[in-house]
Length: 429
Image (cartoon, rainbow, N blue to C red):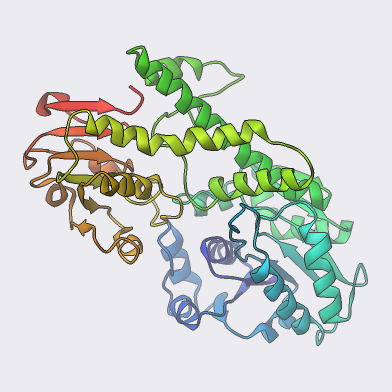
């Protein structure tokens, strides 16, 4: 199938490379010329496991990038993978989605034959039909159901495992305005749907939009509940990890997302939960439980720094932050809890030296006063205390010999030899 992808961020680039890997001919439409050149050179514009190899394999054959929307006319289906950033009140800013839909509609005005447009960006119910659809109709001169088909196909990609998540998903959700649109997406995903482990969910568009939010709100709530239980366990002097390991054996609950610690961040959970809260209020509903989910999550970085201050006077102290990305396996720092930890440390008078295997250059512009080390060992040299903010595998079994005081407060439960430390304390254990 001939596919065009509008947008080359985390989602768009991953979707393009994976669809090419399935044998489709894929064009990435991107306004950033540097990203276009990077993809066409066979290189990945983002750090994501397995992505660089696939782009290198398919670039120049069945994968290419361009800034020209006119090339969409040569494709059968277009995915809108555009950012929907947060406004100050937590609602979605749809300016980029509107602009992309306008450009797409203008390009389709010159196309002979039918075309399917699929929204893959995370948007609140009603956006696909009430915002994107009317713009496409106005700009293209075509009507939904008559030359133009519309669908919603939410993504469930986790940073660090996005390629695997796309190619080996638990489910594929298709919300479409017609059986023809649904059939096209079934054909597109046929190699993935052939897996026994993948469920196909076909529904209307609004349900498809809300499934993504419900999915992330549930997982974020589970993590915050786990962290609340972890905080309570610590007050009792109990190990939350032992407690939650036993709880996870209950098949009604499962052992997934049961690691208590510093909390959730990234591009999805914070934005999606906030958008759902804002959307609920717009509909006249007070989402009290989701408000509490966010409050528990936002309190964890301060609790981590409080624990460090119990052992190290922070005014003038040299403190090490291990990990900057919001999770291991990615260079994504959006809503990373590590950044909150840095700000709390600085506000209490500490100087900060930080290390992360891949995310330093993403953090440096906004935190130029932080000292950045080229290894974990270098970051720990001369430190009065350290905190673990991201559980990168290379942090397991670290040597802490270079610290002035071997005080480590762990927000992620890495493997350490506690006998080598003066103080080792976990955030929730």
